[in-house]
Image (cartoon, rainbow, N blue to C red):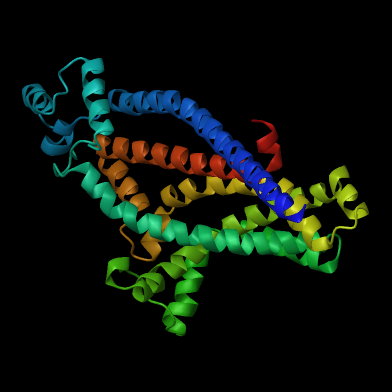
Length: 342
């Protein structure tokens, strides 16, 4: 009996494992299809509105190159060189097809390729934003979990007060303090500049640590608050009570039931935070002397360089949609609520 039971048990286990893999793959594909179905119309509408900004702004490359005293004939000649005398929909289609090929056009101010200019700044901002997100998620999850596990105690109140304080601290103020204390006074980090990762991981981390810490505080606060609230709510659910009655250890109850059901809101918060970190870091980049994506966007807007601003908006849209797609895929894999919805 033993010699025949083992192969049968092994086959059953392989069959159960195969079913679980197919179900997981099905959930991921459904979540991916839903996200793509949302992305396509959103991207089309967003790019159309973005391109329409040029017509609504009334700006022209002739005004930038020739000044306000340019004659109508000179303005018409410059605009014809840029193809702005063609019908609006024709201009939009040429621009949109260029986007699909990774071409965002040329700058009105210097004629440089916008894709190249954005790529240079985006690498800096992505480095800082990614490190800020890692710090924010790590510290936020630790604080939120500790507060939930010690709910209504002094530790919970202390963590709640701490995250409330850091949530109202502007990143540029934190950045100035970090530069004054850790860079100028203690000489632990460089005060400004950027070193690409290709030139060494150590120097790269040293240059992005202070701006990343300055940007991470808001992420820490939001993640900690969301996670603490959702975990405390999950502990009150019937399935947790049932798990405790069945004699499961506190560790298994937390990781197997509470965390899986309570992590969703915190992950959704992370999905919103990353693109915001990339695009809203212009003041921090000024403080730390970084030529990043946010600073490029600000300089382009100040100069009236509409194609560059349009390129910034398109890249921002792609970042928002792509990162939220990743978060949705993670949610579909991790949270039971999302799995039941498939």
